[in-house]
Image 1: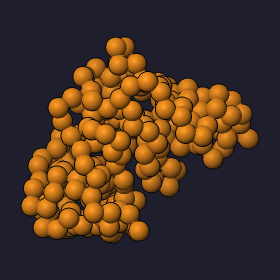
Image 2 (image 1 turned 90 degrees about the vertical axis):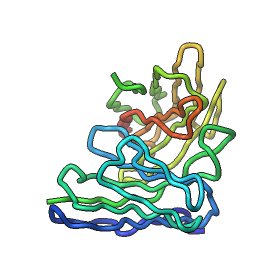
Image 3 (image 1 turned 180 degrees about the vertical axis):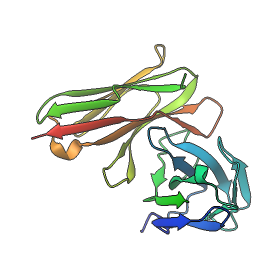
Image 4 (image 1 turned 90 degrees about the horizontal axis):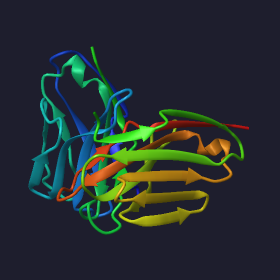
Length: 116
Length: 109
């Protein structure tokens, strides 16, 4: 199993451009998450999904959109990129809620995005 | 004030030393996670616990629900333990993790 994969690894955008960060998992996990990690800050939840067709906002959703048409894929869309979106983005998945049972989250390798 | 506070922020140790990293939180939780972020950036889950103590190899995690405090211990530390260790809690009634800012550990030979 590849686990959680993310593309691209690095990207530089100009202000106002748009892009999609791809995330795929092959573990048949229901729950998927997008986080951003800024220097000196803890990870912040952008959006999450509890299954195909269901998404919900996290702590910092402004400027982003998501969709979940399949169990495997959870792309994150940035519209009108701004310098404040310069960050490292992590996708993660878990079999069910991380609030119950033993369920850990499995993280992708991250995408380093710079907006100039 | 952050809902999850870790201490210390930075920690250096000599190989073989016993390491303790602390995590305090201010909200009711259903679970607490410890994660490790490698120097290359990858994040892996170490423990998930809701009570008591768990051990995996040289790593031990404890939690005191009444005191809203958890500790991560590393026995016989090694340079390969050098990483950022992150505490995260699951707020009661939610599915979402709230993360601390991490403790950067460097172990020197």
